[in-house]
Amino acid sequence: MPTIFFDFDSTVCTKESLDEVIALALKEYPEQTGLVERVEQITNQGMNGELDFIESVKARFVICPLNQSHFTLTGEHLKHNLTPGFTEVFAWLKSNDWDIYIVSGGFLSSILPSIKWLGLNPDRLFANRVRCADNGEVLGVDESSLLWTNNGKTKVINYLKDLRKIKGPTILVGDGSNDLAAFAAGAVDHFIGFGGNVVREKVKAGAPHFVKTSEEIISILEKI
Image 1: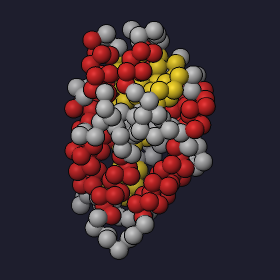
Image 2: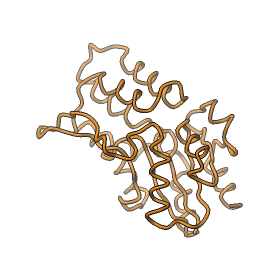
Image 3: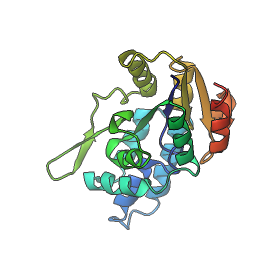
Image 4: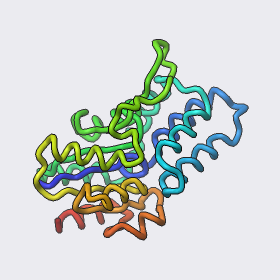
């Protein structure tokens, strides 16, 4: 059985989930002009490989105070912002008995509603988690997660391959430099760079396949 791993932000979803969380929180701080643009700049630096993952997340977390409610509300919003055609991709995968996982450097509570919307079980999602006080105030990141490293996707995919005895071909679909890095490290057999929401030039140059539509994804998968 073939196994496919998807990135979430700017791949399955048109948005960057953490950026959306912070944008929601910033609505409570209208005097903080220009900070949404600053958050987007930091994200792009991370996804383009100009800033490592942990530094990118930490830099965004200090923009403004965050609460668990910001993540939860954003999650309900993001399930309505799935990339056009991806519900059809997931339906095709299920009908052809593919094993499907989402592996994201984003945060669980802002992604989980989309996973359920796509008809996947929660155990198919691997993402980071926030640490919160009793009042919901975000204190930081659960740094025990396999994903809380600069090569977290490689670690999680290798962990799953060992845990679930994955034997068939493995494929990763993603838009970021960390997705390309997981392929380069040998975590998967095939990599499809996705540029339907944003084109990362490093990924476009290094990916064996680079596509912009869901139809192109299915066309490649049919040949694997």
